[in-house]
Image (cartoon, rainbow, N blue to C red; front, side, top):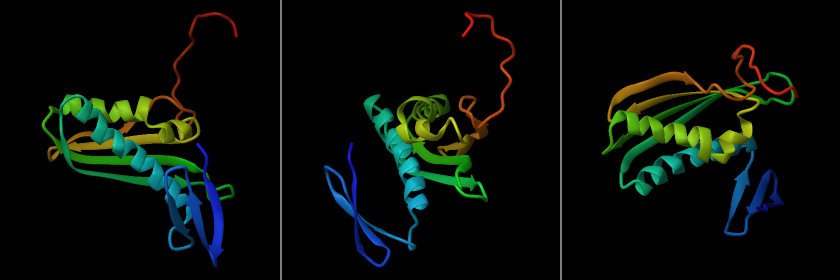
Length: 154
């Protein structure tokens, strides 16, 4: 993957990829907002494609993301909470599995930040809240004591 950024005027930049181009208009939308939008869109595409590949259909999808950042520079993400709201022709357990498949396996942007960011999520499926403030257990952003594990010395 390769992206090229070219300064246009004032605080406008053009991003070119191998497939397309778009304008980044700072400070109208900051680069960190584009970054968060990319993270959310990555997972949202999974929530459309995974069910489709299983013969299911998702409608009315909305994914919101809220980040808490460091106050000092660099202002990294400390926490990310994603809220999924969608309808589908599947049961709640299957819908929750789609979200977890995105978070744990398929969404490369979330998996890029998960070692440094505590990530949580909520899911509303077919109008019913089925998961609320669930924490991802992996990644450096959370402090979970797994206890002593017997194994080979490192």
